[in-house]
Length: 150
Image 1 (tube, rainbow, N blue to C red):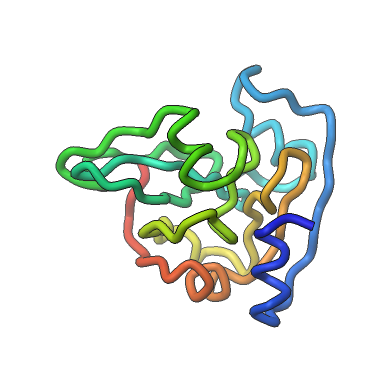
Image 2: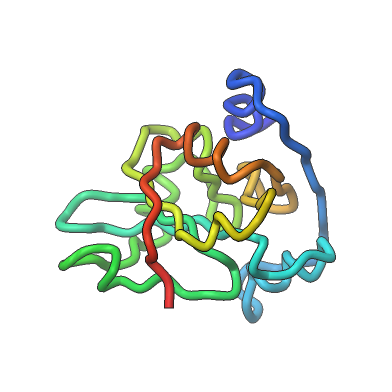
């Protein structure tokens, strides 16, 4: 059980777990490969990115088929390094979930999330995704919703 799954259970939301294998981090577009392994459109799978905005870490949840627009994220935004992201979230890259973070970070979810009845995000480890309603993700993370992709 991961902290992400525990957070979803504690909140009493409806969710479904999906396991997959055969996707290696660092080989091609990882998120798109995960979507393919799950038989879902890449636009329905959301990746969790950690970025520094004005010196503070934040979480950005964006569709796998798009890129985070750093200008939309903040004036001085840059992606966090692997070690910094892992240390702040408690998860390894390729398994970073917006749920159950080691410490709560400000979160922003891309506005495209409303195009789906459910979305998939990492459940806190490589090989495991959690499917949930966008409204539940937003409520559990305290996220703001904005157009943050290109």
